[in-house]
Length: 520
Image (tube, rainbow, N blue to C red):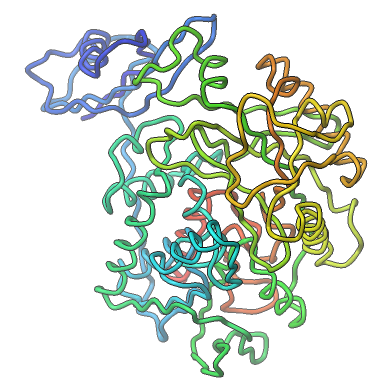
């Protein structure tokens, strides 16, 4: 029997033992009946102007016991994620893409003996990191190996954030798997867990090694250029070198930047639809400014670490919100095509860089676009090419002080800190180039966020553009059995297929697909 004790409030300066003692006292159980104590959840509560930590603590008992009649003491409902295969698969499934969705799909298939074949267009994560570092340092860009493409997917170079809004019991399996392969234990209970790019690289390699050691295959620089289809059923894939791999199950875990795959799917007549997405820029402040604004007198306390934030503002069916906040991190170059500029953010596991940043993005709705299914892709591409031109056509990024953006004037000098974007910046006025609906929504949102942190937008924050890859601009339609509605045996999966947003939700969708294949 395990019980969960919730709503344990402690001051900033406390120890884990303080949380355990409070949980035991609140539960009313006898100490000699306790076999184990562990943290279920840990978060920070800033309401009322005084920072507090909030814990949920689990207590495992030797023998069932009568609980105190408190609303915050409950019996823990244990959940074990299990799959029940219907029968052995006739052919080995092929997983296209080795980002979070592809990794977890292949991992679960491997656990149940399916021996998947993974095809990843980019390089292994170590080679990929060399290409990324070369680009950041010299501007030499590789279209097949970059921040978007390669082992681990886009999430590998964006802090390894594991926060998600979905409520799915598979989320715990994802966190436990990351922990199993090397992540710190705190990801199992932190309210906003993150791995850090430096840690995620090694974890991804370990999961890949497990897949390979247990009968699976992972092939890099293996670009799928065609799908083999017969009578509306999948029969395999064709690679760029002409090789054909035959199978009756193909998982499309392609990522939200796989534009050549979108074009292929469109050409083959596989059903897709436009979906909302968002575009904007990165906003950057000094880490000290954000820490002081969020933590007040406790800023710099080692228990708190670097501060984060999450803001949103709505007008009708449109919104402006912060996204992928990177405390103590940097703004990075995240393009996947030549002669374009895309921004993103990343942090290392210690989140100790001098600046903090976040995306500030506004809604793009299907009705804003042309009727063509791929019009969202072209909308993103147009902004990315524009940013390249504004930056001087050398992969520098256009930048503007947030106060100047609100006041519609071109920035001429930074103030108290410098941008962290690695390839340099050029001053601009985003007002001159952004579509009116997006510009107005970004301004309204920034004005609202300034009420939550004074000086957030009206001070010396730096905007670096453009952030365009927040999510897929389209969805590859699938049925309740997770098959494509057009092609039997084709499984659209994860963020690139339009069914996830972030590492954890993409990983969960990969698990869903693997489970559907095994239980079919």
